[in-house]
Image (cartoon, rainbow, N blue to C red; front, side, top):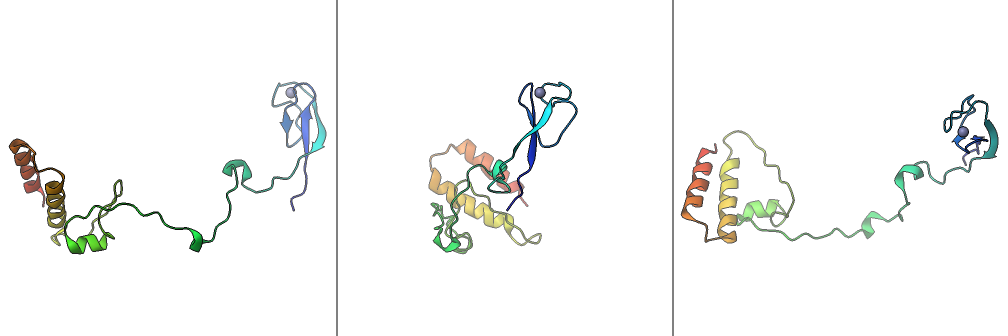
Length: 136
Ligand SMILES: [Zn+2]
């Protein structure tokens, strides 16, 4: 149990200080701090910064939230992703140069794009094709 510590309050403005000082930190008056009351011990070490204390839960009692997945259309890639891409999620694709990262992603994007919209303009398709051709 934490030991109650005295505080020093200003007789002029009521400002409190954990230790005695010659000058009040609140109003600047001199020799106005007096030891007045014992500070109540905080219930938690981090109560001041944590706000309200949540209820403790066992990890087994917490059910993970299922997010809707968007399949990429590449069965093996979807399996690794846990069923597909999660909206707002980030997937880091890593590997040695030439292993096929760009090819895999282009195939996945091509499948997703074909599902999203089949009515894009020919000019937009040419620009997309040109950008894909720069990948390496
Ligand atoms: Zn003061």
